[in-house]
Image 1 (cartoon, rainbow, N blue to C red):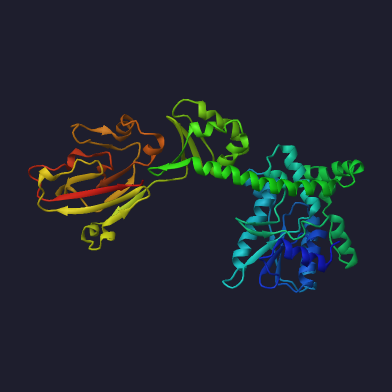
Image 2 (image 1 turned 90 degrees about the vertical axis):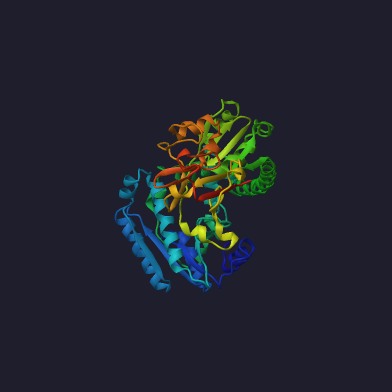
Amino acid sequence: MLTLETFKQDWDKQFPDVKLHTNHFLLAVSGGVDSIVLAHIMKTLNVECTIAHVNFQLRGAESERDEQFVRDFAICHQIPIQVNKVDTNKYASAYKLGIQEAAREIRYAWFGALIEQLSSPHKQVILLTAHHANDQVETILMHLFRGTGIHGLTGIPMRRNDVLNIARPLLNFSKEEIASYAKTNALSYVEDSSNQKDDYSRNFIRNTLMPQVQKIYNNANDNIIATAQRLKEAEEIVNKTVDAYWQKGLVKRKGILSIAIKYWNKVKDNKTYTWGLIKLYGFKPQQLDEVIKILDANQGAYITSSTHQFTKWVDQIQITLLADSTQHLVIDKTVLEAKALNEKYITTQYGKLSFEIIESMDMANISKAPNIVYLDANKIEWPLLLRTWASTDYFYPFGLGKKKKLNHFLSDLKLSPGLKKQVAVLTAANRILWVIGKRMDDRFKLTSNTTICLKINWEELA
């Protein structure tokens, strides 16, 4: 039964770290019975809150009616209100989205903006939605029919604090309990006529499927929710086991994350393990089989998610970011004047450079280490530019005596895709001085006429 007392008891149990009277709550109110009951409860408990209503303009006069009803409710109960009126059809068309997807994007983007607007250093703002137990059942069934994994079968989370700070305090109460509260407290509300149509899968489950199921299984709703809770507990155990496995297998070498194919093959036939890994890197469940195929593919085979690329190289899978990882760092001549040791270094995403001027260079003392280069300082124009290499780059590799495309030079080194991607060049006046850690440019080598030398040292990431 939903009462002020049972609401508070459930709140303290579900959100022990969120105090009702020390936070500001943004209430998503459509005007339906669920959100009206939630708003009434929060007001009756004298909680600081603001109503947020979105008029999606999808149901003509009915949408206008809903907006006015919520405005009147807010005035009657002396609750501040924010309203967003938006042409959802136009938005969906512009961004090539379905209506429901467009409405969700509009809604949560605006809620996020409101949270930021209402927040203060002394008080956080938490979004409350009126999802209830029946919504939970419908969501679980939708995920089941779509072929989800364990996580989808755990349903709607009670609390989320990733993109938005959201809590759903009615999730343990049924639609019947919410309607009973509204009747007891003589609350008026509006009905969305589209909820009676089976145009959407959720409506079909609510209006047609579940009433039929409940004729056979009276406690179907309770049983589904109880099963979801047990699955949530099982998911926690599975996640800990899977995460521990990958933490042992993932290795970072020279800034590149990789995993041995031999190690992955131990669990290749268990898709729960593979999903536990690839979901961290932006892959979708539909890509699971394709990801597994690259374990047996030819060298260089790869597959990408929205954020990462998995590449097979020799006996490992390399994991690299797809996002723009270019370096672009201007190095001023003042680096040569630095007095403190830490100021002599220029830090990059893959390592660090240090610079030193040598006025009297003994050629016999020149190091042959690939991470150190000696250049004729008089031939160099400052400032220098450190950047990621480009396919159009060329230089004169030291000792070769002629120009060569950098792309071909790197291919000859047979670098893995991950290592090749992170190669950087140091340039001056659009001419490459040094393919860092690989080869200097012959045009800047020391000669018998050199009077001043620039020594550059490269310390690569372990």
